[in-house]
Image (cartoon, rainbow over all chains, first blue to last red; front, side, top):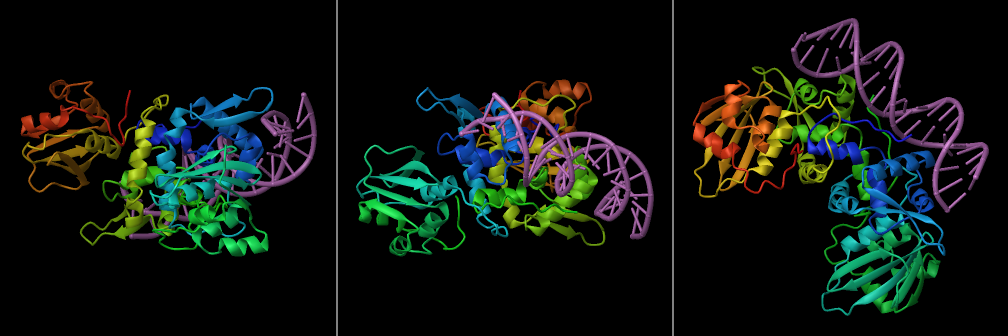
Length: 223
Length: 223
DNA sequence: CCGCATCCGTTTCGATACTG
DNA sequence: CAGTATCGAAACGGATGCGG
């Protein structure tokens, strides 16, 4: 049963927390920032959440207009959750929380890392040269496919199959994070089989190995 | 006993929530945004929190370097809590949450409103003319005193007795909120005794009754 | 009063099992 | 795959007590 306790506080900050302050709520929002996900995708991305809790949170966020459940047309025959316009307006807040959280040490093992987290990190940490030619990448992580586009010095990430990728990469979130923070090289990761690469290798290296304005390598993850 | 559960997620967003995601934590931060408060001040500001919970949260925030306990020198002989530098960096996030929370309807009665909440609203919603002469105000709310200064089109609020106030106002947070959102006039509130005013009345009206462009607000009560 | 600590009933959370 | 059902553990909330 979805919880509905309130702070009983008229302050808008408290009212926001009445909606997104419950456990897991903002992490569900994080997972949906790059596109719709299915129930089971969310479970894989948030292994700590139990199924009934995830159900409760989704219902609660839905009832508050943050998340919306959509049933896809017959060929897919599946239901996905995605953010409403209101939910998308939480994005700067969630990302700012991530910026603040960089200073917080990693929790003790076992530690998980979702594809969305690393891709948000990718999007926020890469600053390709504005003169560089646009490129499109196909990323496969946790059995899901993302489209990554670089253009005008910006990186864009969204869920789904790219139309005409220049290069492709299949790996796990943790390895991708290591590539992004420079603790392993693309070449090394290929030889160990941790990543599988296809297409324009140089373009991939431009995306992954350009750590302009990289402050400190290490545990910088997810924002 | 202070709680210490973690999301077990390497993402910086999750790590931030490991620290400030527990119930009441961000509201404690909100209360400290305008200056140090004592344990009992916090209890008055957050009537829903039980004493042991407040103790736990303060200890937890302290151990994570967000809040610091300070013991005041003998004349005061009291201990106060205030934000560390790290804690103060949560301010834009907390205020942004407030901006988002404006759309969330008020919870069912009984609804409380803290002095800090309204003063954050005051600070965020007033935009005095940059040409207007600087003014200093003494606000007394919930038996605490704040200094409010307007200067160069900005409003500054901090805890404590002002040095040389132009005007003073004593009322309760809820009435001040009504003054700020225009649902009652200063004149009316004076006749009912809901506010007590002293000093330069015109300066007070300039501060309270100038609702030009009151958009960005951290703690606006709304509706 | 202030700053807690302790006790205790209630709610929420988390894990596992199970169903359409 | 997308959830329910159930149950023990933990967190929360209220009341009371206790030393400054």
